[in-house]
Amino acid sequence: MLRAPLIVPRANGSSAAPAPAAPRRILIVSDAGPPQVNGVVNTLAYTARELRTLGHQVEQLSPPSAGTIPCPTYPEIRLTLRPRRLVARAFDRFAPDAVHVATEGPLGLAARAECRRRGQRFTTSYHTQFPQYLRLRLPIPLSWSYAWLRGFHGAASRTLVPTPTVKRELEAQGFANVVLWTRGVDTATFAPGARDAFGDLPRPICLYAGRVSVEKNLGAFLDARLPGSKVVVGDGPDLAQLRARHPEVRFTGYRFSAELAAAMRAADAFVFPSRTDTFGLVMLEALACGVPVAAFPVTGPIDVIEDGVTGALDEDLARAVKRALALDPAACRAAALRQGWDTVARQLIEHLDPA
Image 1 (tube, rainbow, N blue to C red):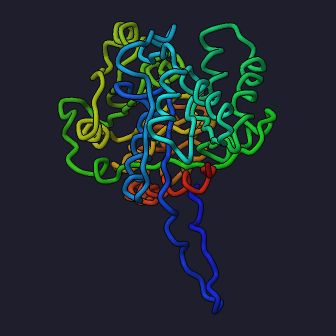
Image 2 (cartoon, rainbow, N blue to C red):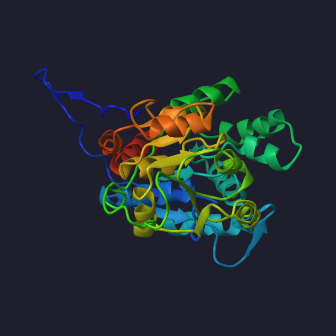
Image 3 (tube, rainbow, N blue to C red):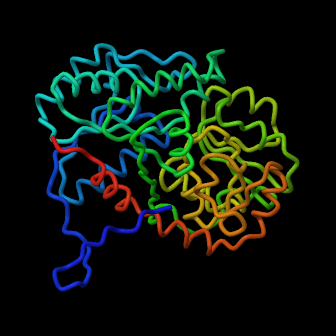
């Protein structure tokens, strides 16, 4: 849910919106960056764009094109070699008065260490349910992962999370100074329009868009008995095996921007089977196209979707799809229009520390 804008009382007792924040020099450090395609990359790109529109100077530090190695089991993520040198150079060149560490990888660790060495306060954000993702790949207890993450984020003045549910979950794990930082959607690109992208497929069309990998729980969608057709937009390590196992499904590979929006608006329901996402930015993009969402009632969907209005939440995914197909697309679009990226940028400014 979006935070209401701060209202400052005037001397005569009336109220007015606050004056714009003074320009800042903001360094955002992330181990996720182009050409990766995911919610973290999109969130930081849109936020940086809006921050610049508001008059702030923004430097984004992400893995370089050289000097990286692929992350085991997730080769699309590149792990930076010698990150301390890159971070130190960024601090010296840009001289930030605010630092936000967005991820917990090599660059994030180096930025955290550099801030502590220089005595500069910083904020962090929690984008990914890292303990759950890691547990799907390796037999590592959740308690170990949470303990490490508490240490990483504990040095920050604030840890920013996307939803109230994630905030409660982290606080239950012993995290301190957790604050809300919502997400937005580009409602100009993602908007209702022509729905002919899959004109050769029988309706209703149920569509998923995102990474094709184990943590997205795609089997729950592809194995469900649903009417009409299924479409999967995206790529990832599980694409080949899922395509071989489900020849009846249309797999398109990655689509971006206007092409992704065209695919989404052609759907009758957007299916989000993940049980491990902290938010699920693609759900907002689907809503902006006027497409209701079917999902499990778990972290992410329960804060993004209004059950029975903009989507359907149910432990039976097929039942959720059936309910979602009956919903009003106009209500979905109206909900998305309240989620602008300018609000996301202003929230970040509120949370940042002074130098």
